[in-house]
Image (cartoon, rainbow, N blue to C red; front, side, top):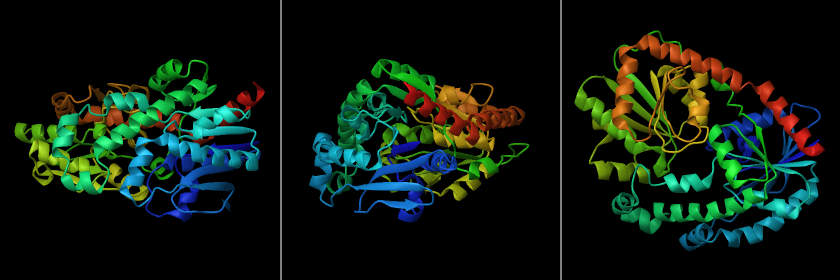
Amino acid sequence: MKVLWFANTPCGAIEILSKNYYAGGWLKSLEENLVEINQIELTVCFYWNKPLLPFKYKRTNYYPIYRNTGNSKIVRHIKKYFPKLTDKNEIPLLLQVINCVKPDIIHVHGTEENFGLIQEFTEIPCVISIQGFLLPYVVKYYDGISKTISNYYESLRIKLKYTPISILYKGLKKRSLREQKILLKSKYIIGRTNWDKRISRLLAPNSKYFVGNEILRPVFYEKQWEKNNLAGAINIVTVMSGPLYKGLETVVQVADLLLNNKSVDFRWQVIGVNENHPVAKIVKRWLHVRYADLNIELVGNKNEEELSELLVNADIYCQCSHIENSSNSLCEAMIIGMPIIASFAGGTDSMLENDKEGILIQTGDYYSFAGAIKSLVDHPEKAIVYGKNARKTALLRHNANSIVKELIDVYETIKLN
């Protein structure tokens, strides 16, 4: 079976294209397992910021499409404000790839990009995997940090030299309109949470829904959290990316509350952002804090080996975001077997069962979040049980062999329809 993926990342080709690229690890893992099946011939198409000819690496064929992001601020803003202009030029390039590959099935990973628009122009069956829905993200964008606060505390340097958060928000709104068009045309959807199933029934009413879980990066299957207490200074860890809705302000508010309460001795490492990140600067100015004074360390991006070591040596994992579908970072913490506290956002409750595999807290409720941390510290036996239960669930859910078999079954079912 010839399968063509359209993906937001280069998947396995990232190994030879960039050493400092951290996104899309789960897709790379899925690719590596899928191409081991002899009946599958896989091609991956993706956008890249340099012109590249099609190439083969290991067992996968790659079709990079050059996207000129432009060094000019004006060009970057045009692309964010008017995605239709980009789509008009790029859809013919995507169709050229389809004509060259002649796949039996097309698999589009995510609705964030314009890949799903090709459904209008081809008779080849196409399935869309849901990574997250842009429309609900637009609604929750300013949940933790209001638009007024963001605009007021964002530095003039960012406003003038880089892309302001308000521009990113407007770009997201524009792309959410394109997402609606993609979903209305979709006949087949792959998701994995109650959240994405409910929303897809609304936005893609004519589609059939399949469940497809994700294969995590290999190193996280190998590591296991094995602490038997939470004594001494507690090491809390959070993994987040840069958007406002990821909850950095909640980390600060919880840490401040714990320090003032003097009930928990802790340090908190936040992976994925550093103190120079625009959102980190906004939170610092708005809440009048120094991260070091709150025992918070923003450590920036880490590769999978570094991240797995930080997780396995930490005491508690905290997810503070205001909206998620199925957080890969949360799943990685689960499969390691960590005690977890997570915001009850989006599809998180499909990943983590409250009071069995961890604790779910209403988003932004930093008093309850702080109380949950103290509860695990006071009752380490419960934290350990949560971690063991989480690992057991995650090992089943992210079993590579099962996931590949289920995906091939989805492909076969769609081909027969």
